[in-house]
Image (tube, rainbow, N blue to C red; front, top):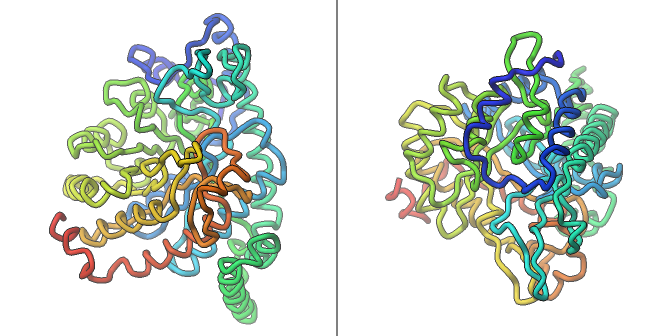
Length: 462
């Protein structure tokens, strides 16, 4: 790829309203930073984005399953080998469970190496009578509640680039340097999870994988796919000045790619059809996701397809549904049915996190594992009723032993939340809960063709 940038891809969005952008106090400083970023090397390459688009086409056609997960909001101080390894390890373990149980390829995509920005419902926050700008992620301002920390600083955009670069380097080292070898499945389980019921269940699966690999080796089969893992990065393309600065023209094709990550998505708060985010995403060749909440209409979904995937290309567009456990069975059937009838082949992905957040009596923002699982279950029920493909899950998780979501096999209670509540924004599943969810999802996938005797209302709605 060359350093020339496609002016259309960069500038057409500027004529439209852009929601959720920071109120930068010094426009000249922002312009200087953006100009500098435009000269930086790409974080990912167009060919890698094309590879992911091909894999997502398999998901859209019902031939593969997407596992997408990572932090709600990455932080600059979490870019260490141990923390990146723990996230990668958790996703690799989940993928091993899903691949073995479903017998389909699992496409592994992290919310990682770029998820430093967050949309917020309010522009300011008030504490003890003091009003300051809300925390919008480390790419914009700091979490500390002081005037200096909360003032948006465009220099942080450069820090985001360098943090993303370091994270990607670590991911590539882990996934190609032997750590992702399937014969490591036991070693991935040598810490706290190993002494839990979920850890024991995982060890049973690891032994079965070992037996299968031993048999294949005895037959003379040892594919390279057993020793490395394809692992892709994704983030919400929220800060358009940053995303545009990292858009480059591919020297092979003359097409524009946002080289800040392999896959970008548009959030529920920024998916306006006449808005800047949809306009920007329409001009780049990356795989694109769109978050769809419970107020989404089928006409809006079809209009988004027309804007973002006019060529009806499988793998180009994913709809990431975030309905909430109490609405997914009511809202999703109409969307899936009409999109399917249109002939579009989108990948349907379930985000069971964002529609199930509540404030606990302790004051912590949290999520219930049971609510998360119930939305996933509803997602599978809807697709089963319509004979469509439940393409994957999109999860906020960490590889650390945090206490941010209640429930799960570890049975974290509200009283436990304060012990290791470490998120910079929204609550994440810890590694134990993430593996528990992977086993549950694997079972749902295996059962996806079973009759809906227990949920006749879903079949009726479909």
